Image (cartoon, rainbow, N blue to C red; front, side):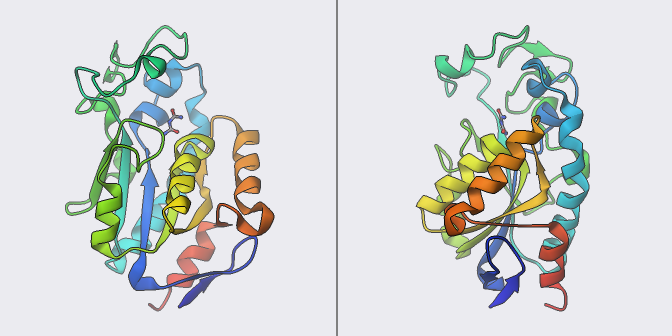
Length: 222
Ligand code: C5J
């Protein structure tokens, strides 16, 4: 077992059973003209998490450890987008509408791509998900079972929506979860802070948090 100095207490993890999961680092959330901006958000708020996420990717890739990327997308016919999601928001652009990066939040459109800095490498698992949680209506559980994963290191956006939802889903499925504090962002800094606090409250009721430097340092020499 290796250990990451973390909150609320050190996080022990077996290297061979640990995977990095990067949630929804897509152009639709991080670049102007996508879903995030269509909902009225300042997309520059998500930029600080990019470099720390890249550092985690580099560290996991260098050791041949599993990396999983997720993308929030819908089928072109929107058959996997319930009306409750489609009609939410009230902005000028809705899911499926044409925007400057193609149709908003639709699979295969330029806006649905993961940003170039964090683009998946050949062989890395990319999970397309129609919901906020990455386990809902996806093959993620099967992929993790095949890898033999028991511990998940989380990065991605947004902290209180898709990251937290997936972390809670993972908890209920028995995974030990750590969210990397500087490798996640929200359009609302107060929501990010609150999410980190609620994850590690009550003795780590949802899991652990730690900075990327602590995660990378724990991998050094292994
Ligand atoms: C949102 C996400 N915020 N990836 N999606 O709609 O957090």
